[in-house]
Image 1: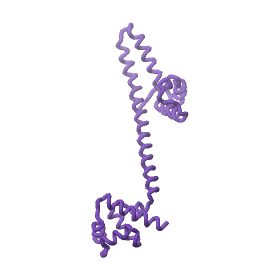
Image 2: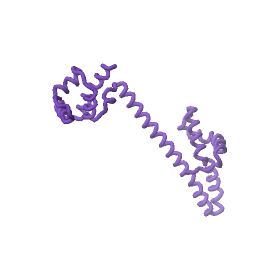
Image 3: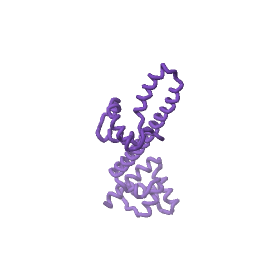
Image 4: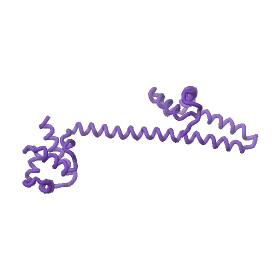
Length: 190
């Protein structure tokens, strides 16, 4: 394990030095500035090749010079890849959670438009009102509490239902009505 740590440190040392476009001489100069008086380009070269042991304090300062930490410098490639994958997945999950929350917020905003449409309907004359009233009633059938819609969507995903099938919503209106009964009257609120 100790040899792995040293090999990882040496590999990471080269990688970071090259990433920061630093020469071995520049690294040696920065080490001298931090109190390692006899540090030379040859010392850096031998350290990178694993030809000389490195003391803990020296390793910590080298990591700082290279913009890293001792812990990260000793980490192996597989662990770095794994931790990178974990971080990437965590970011993607967070993004999707917020996307879902914003989609529910948008749903609540859209369903609140039903109230505005109902007001607009009151300005229509009696002849056109009946068709418009039926259209509004159809629209009102899609108005549910946001929590019921969220639970319904979660059930659809868990069941592996085809979410691209728009007929799914119409076939599941009864389920949404039951969920709405569990969460209050069918009105969405933001």
